[in-house]
Length: 425
Length: 175
Ligand SMILES: [Fe+2]
Image (tube, rainbow over all chains, first blue to last red; front, side):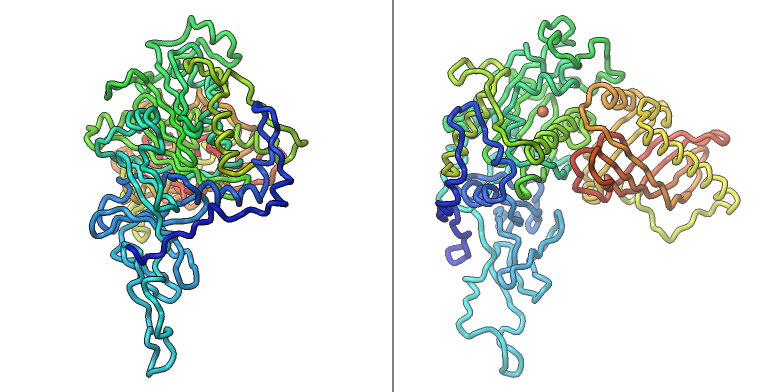
């Protein structure tokens, strides 16, 4: 591996100091400036300083690359990459660009390969990303061909650092990253292990979704526990998430990751005082097929839902018997893709798999609550793109109060404190 | 239902007599036109009535289906789940107002076994949001099994398989 082309360190590329002076972050920690959602330069800087900076980026599930040669297209930030299992069974990740003319050569969502060949000039790469052969290297009849000193080793695919945890794959542009476990911290790690407990997974499928908004709005959405009790009428109507439920919101020490845990009460929230404040609560409604929301006990966790945000690009969700890992892929300042893998466990019987598939109606771009979030993110984005300039406000809750309330913006403030540090803003 | 059943060889024409194919194709086309009208009018509460009591509706991304992955964008097994989906759209989901138009074409009868009629069609859904130009929401194909009773059809199973794998924002109404 020593001579393989490591990804260049762009995280310390000095930004144009004059240019950054145009951006003034508001003094009030309850304010978030709106240019972070719309500005091209900020979006570019985020690629360098965050996604290609000192972060572990979620890139897929091990179950998506089950065998030698299995690969998926994925992303590090906005940059297309390939994640593949090599001959030794080790998971590798490379930029999806030929070392020759830079073509993005892998065009399939997933597949199985013995090696990768760029179709343009048939440069061929092994599963470890090393350049294996170059056609007409010695030319034809002694003429043409590659220079004598052409170094095959220096023309491999650009390699990324890879780590895994319980079946999830993370990549980094840096080789000297701290272990993923330290990156998460002990409390977040415990949450992570609840949502992905180390048993072999079974992939149910992948939703791919283009959202209209800045990628950070999705991180915000999952850290914004206040909205879950108000926007998502389905959750409140059927008792999945109600403000008075037993709950807590934690962040790691840096403030960049967060987890929201919630315990769903038995039955429906008919007599819950908090539903009186929710204008959209439908108390008369019962599901025609309530079995869909049954909790099949499958772990010792006291919580019925755990929603994790892992900086910078992963959302990991356990809700009742739904498990999903979402990858956020920025596509410029006002658009992003979600690659949304839903999974169960390999030892699920047919009935359990069917139960998970039915329950998955809640999430995704056609989901009972997935639709709410996707739509409202577009509303916020349209406001930022078309409206007059203003700061967003995130005033709810206190930073030093106990973590057992969801009516708080604490996790958002934590994220933006960290964001400013990474961005130098 | 797996992908091989959904995507039968295109070269095989049903062996039913041509008059019968014509009649059945007309019934399916008429059914699909009504289905499209109801959804395009936003009458989602009427949508479950297009299905039998044990009717199944699946909305599948083509890349998942081709990889044998069962996850659906929407999945209703039985009238109860169909009604719950309709209720959620009408009452609990939050989404911006939109117009939609289904175009259903290329309808072909695959076969008739007992009273179960198999057919496939292609669909395109155009969607128009406030102050925005019309865009394509989905391009896909319907893979259907109908219960045929005289001249009346009800869906026992509709698999909507969409090519538009990268879903733009959200799919609110079932294609
Ligand atoms: Fe939400």
